[in-house]
Image 1 (tube, rainbow, N blue to C red):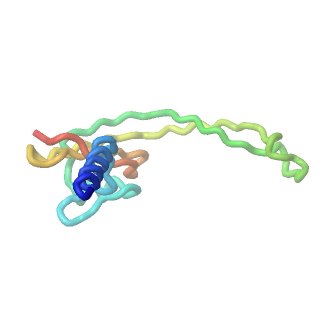
Image 2 (tube, one colour):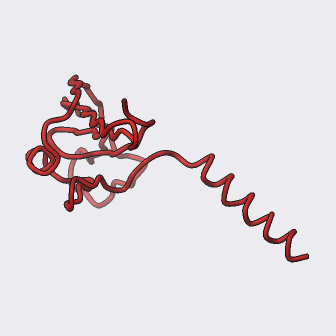
Image 3 (cartoon, rainbow, N blue to C red):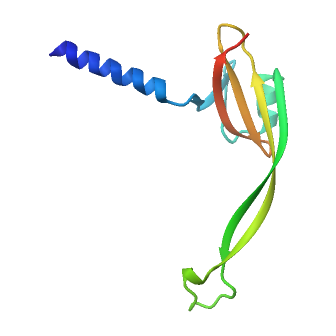
Length: 123
């Protein structure tokens, strides 16, 4: 009975690890932590120059709703859509820590850390 419960728990843990994404909450650079929302200058100061940098620009379209006037008689179904275009500069920095550690990918949007992902072992 005990061995069945132990095996079941091990299987659950292994499946959770296998199917989880490789997203990291933070990046450790020496004794400092880099987290989402940090500026690019802080990452550069704490972690140094990245091994590879990709830069591109995306155009994003957001839809907002607004009332034609501020009359309280208008309900939500009468709100008119308003489209806003926004240009976002995206940078993806790659840190290769060598063959015994995982590589880290830091994605910036408009100069702020948006996502940190750990990859395969470095080279």
